[in-house]
Image 1 (cartoon, rainbow, N blue to C red):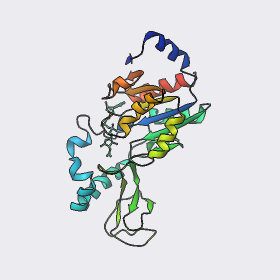
Image 2 (cartoon, helix red, strand yellow):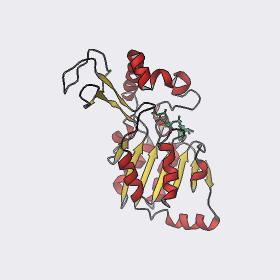
Image 3 (cartoon, rainbow, N blue to C red):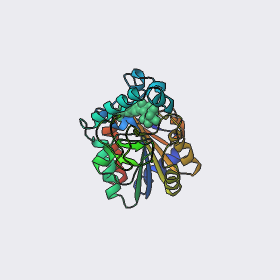
Image 4 (cartoon, rainbow, N blue to C red):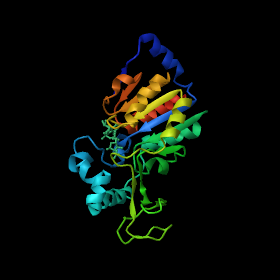
Length: 252
Ligand code: OAD
């Protein structure tokens, strides 16, 4: 386990004193928080983008060109959800939300449902959700835990061959940007967990937090691309590092 501090010594002391004083926390999570549950990350060796090309499975153009290839990719990933469970990091964040004398908002880039299954309530899925389908005809977003197939009908408008995964693809605008902005404007602590910081606008949230004078903490297996933006970095597996940090925040 490595702890890297990017602050001046005096600031370090101030922030050690402040570790239990935060009242409004925004947590950004990425695929690294679900790795110990058994879900693949994207850019690690053996990650999803080493096996699939983004242009083939994660763009609107790919869906127009070859809808079954795209549906198969997300059907497979939706099926995986039934075989995995939240890990200690997901549970620690749910505990933080329940026990902090203040507000915790989890903003996740993950399309899995492990945060909600661990008990997080204040949660925004900025890249969409595997367990939902969206109707291309009427726009309804439907709870959808099975495979999406061409003969499936939208339960709202009744049309068939019109459902797509409720996933934000490359070239599309992430969800809840206003809500994320509002949460950040109220926050006094920003924590980034398990993300390489490669995809915007999520990767830019740390710079936005710094501009708002919010204390910033990175918890990741290794320093991310945006490492220099963080006041503090805690490096190691999320299942170990997140519960430790949450315990410190809750003054345990
Ligand atoms: P990446 O694969 O880019 O990064 C995962 C990060 O998690 C890496 O920095 C790893 O070092 C770290 N990591 C791996 N295992 C870990 C563990 N056990 N504990 C802590 N950290 C660990 O995945 P994301 O940053 O989530 O978007 O990728 C962001 C977006 O890119 C995804 O939401 C997805 C992808 O393309 C879309 O599909 C729109």
